[in-house]
Length: 276
Image (cartoon, rainbow, N blue to C red; front, side, top):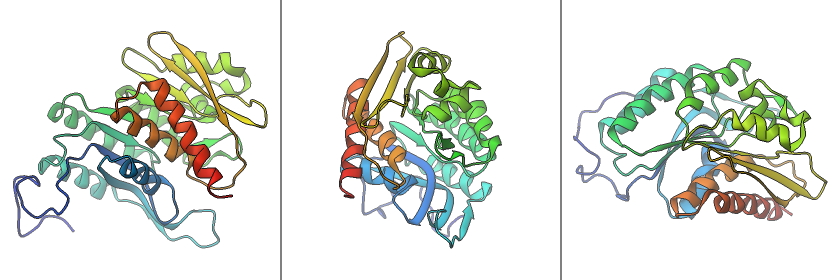
């Protein structure tokens, strides 16, 4: 559906909205009807932290793709571009602080989001883009179109102020293999992505021992640090979404990046522990 018989110049003056709190985050990722991943996981974290967010899907699925039945598919480009434009046209994002981009269904979506973000930045100075490039991991390898990896790097990484790849995804973004080089290799690869005002947090940055997960923080001021949190075995999906959303929520609360990263690791540990 496009357009409407009834229009208003702004959602802020329409009188139709039950929730009139300012939108602080736009989350753009997968949407699964049954499954705590993508937009569902990120929005829950942000909402529970007291931050209103708007969710836009890149793909709509009934369930996680791990089940024997699966229906749905990518959101048409016209829909995604139109929904993004509607938010700008209706002045819904005047108080926006962050855009969080996760899973992309195909490479063309990166260009759509990048074009929109450029216009958003003109309308809302100071808004930041955080990219969680959901492409794969060491255990299963690449689980998306290889062209998607290139599209993140071409269109979104140059606009981002924050990146949260895992070790495998860092290798895809940098055409390197830091997972084989230890923590020094991770730092070196991540440093190639930073510039003034940009940070990278690499999740599962090293193999480590069986009891901990190491996350590497690399910033443009040359500071590189490693944080560890408890490793709990699980087959459940969505940990990366919780991690990235918790960093954004913590930054909105005024936390420094190191503290935000620590909170994110703790949030993932709590979520997995609650499944036991």
